[in-house]
Length: 269
Image (cartoon, rainbow, N blue to C red):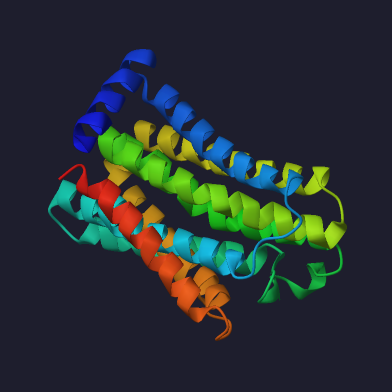
């Protein structure tokens, strides 16, 4: 039944977009941006996240990203060529790309603190440093949606739905801490919306590039998968398991996200 829904949704989107992949990517990018924005708007009604809410939300996102890295990106890259080499090269490039961005762009995590060039630490306001950190997290997600849509529409739609689901709590995780920090509402919500549309830009960029250079798609799938794995392992998991207080809740969040993505992917089986 659910696999029929995905197939029907894919056919409907193709009809609405006249078969143009860039229009499909636009709708997918708009969906993930809106989900992030809706999550950010929780700051209008709430003053802070429940205790452990940040840990559960980040862990849920990490679970989704781990599974999506393999089922929507790395394994399709291997299957499309029958070789590990393009996927392996792409993974290494994705890791290197996010590593360089992480080292060169000034940003700050709520728990890990400031990262990037030391000379830039005091040149940007803390709110911008926090937003840049979230945008770095979102770049691989947008890339994953864009490249998977070019590879296969149904796989791309499942990836879009899963990323959109985890973008809602991610938007909240962006806006609420900023609202608490600044004691304002409008600017933190705007920052959350901005991070969502930065992700949309990556969806469009990924889809456009790999439509033009389709022979590079296996490398692109591997690149997006490697980038997501790097962000998850290096950035998100250390933030989630920073202490013992919410360890069980974080683990539950991770496996909830893991199962959601695995379930959505199984609809294509």
